[in-house]
Length: 230
Length: 230
Image (cartoon, rainbow over all chains, first blue to last red; front, side, top):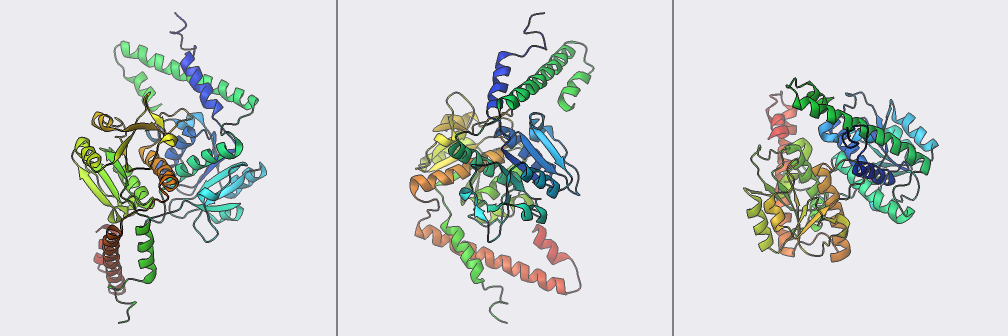
């Protein structure tokens, strides 16, 4: 068996992709989702977090159905993220504040500042509230800033996954201006994450190789089914 | 009956809101959605267009189910927009190009430029392709620029409604820098739109008043039902 055929071997392109992604990762910008009703929104935000290099994402589970991963929408993004689940916003935000995060909550009131006026020079946690109820009282009590994405039309708000993406795009741009760069893992953290991602990629490769072998045998359908849903 | 109780009378706050929205409206930035599979994405993009003052939106209808308005997701945004439906992208983009629009298509290839490098000094149509197939060959052939939102992680792309929102947020920011302002309707266009919006608001007020009267009568449920779905 050649090295390339060995599922334990990681192709150089795959390794480069992982190294590039890790170089763009951060744990000094994070997102908190408060008890979203629609799992599709949770999954869309996870996909956006991966795309913008946000490694750590906090999900406060509400009284509604629990967060349910949807591969089609998240594009498996959660595999590459640290998704931390919490029973309450108070617990989640107190822990983040103890770690030095400033809490910015999307909330429309008189004291709210426009997104464009926020600083991202320090560690920031962006809080997005439930689709109908908005940000919780616990989160507002802990917020260092309340902000809005300026609305120019008739609708009162953007879809929550859209609001998260617009906020993150702005945050990344401001971080590059205010901090010089966005990705900022310490070397030890980056090493740990690279090793974890190499491992994930090797296991993914092994599953694909197994499915390909199964495809050349009389079809039981099992291995392929596992790849799609498992 | 006092003036305030007359559903034909528009409250000053409502009138101000309409005037402010019209001042932020533009027809020199537009969005083209190519045969989206998921009506939820179409509705989310409509809501975003309203929020960012984009008055004219083009929907190319595909072989899939036709665009189906969903009030919960669009928040009735399409009521305040000019939604133009097309049978093909070629027809739609040829018409826009004849009106002087530059066509920017989201498409990942070697010639693609990052979103941040695009100019929005002129009239621009942003084209978003079908969720699985991406931008069509007809659209690529007509594109003045291909662009990407830089992806820093593992997922290949953002959800299409998220990509549209990130693109529009950037476009508005660049338009303010490059053109001095975003909303730019000529006085006659603005007048026409204001009158149309006043009319829509008056009819909406009349429906609400009727529903409120129905609520104080023995419930037949009819009027209220009409408000929610009609």
